[in-house]
Image 1 (cartoon, rainbow, N blue to C red):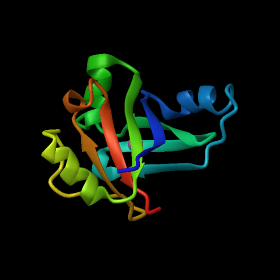
Image 2: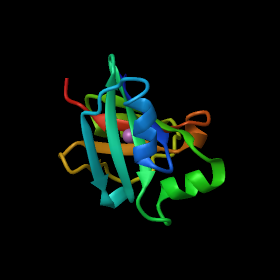
Image 3: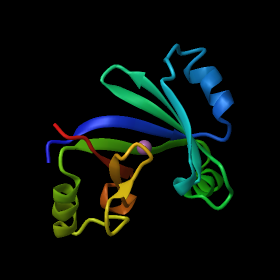
Image 4: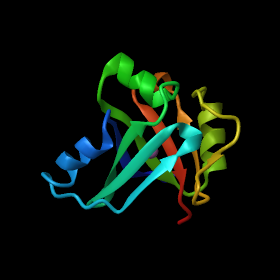
Amino acid sequence: MNPRLHHIAIAVRDLDEALAFYRDVLGLEMTERRQVPQEGVEIAFLPAGETEVELLQPLDPGSGVARFLEKRGEGLHHICLAVPDIEAAMARLREAGARVLSETPRVAADGTRYVFIHPKSAHGVLLELYEVPE
Ligand code: CO
């Protein structure tokens, strides 16, 4: 599958407050900030060397991230691996008995295909796969 670490996502209650730390104190540069209505979140990306930090704030109380914050508080939400062929990766994971959380890849606003793998299948970490052609 040739995966590489694409980003590490942190669930936060208030994106502006989180940026005051990650951007203004730590000095990471924010390259992108947008709402993702299909996931019920607003996200910001801050590149950090070969990978990026993603900050996630829920937009509505019914979203998965809102429930995560309620149950576990702020913190590490998922890690994302880039793979060259998401269909092949999903097939391999399913064959191995992993819980792939959607039948087909989801499609982001920029056309990137992605999917989530249940934490129970990844030793306690929610895993996201992004398709990034090599
Ligand atoms: Co992500």
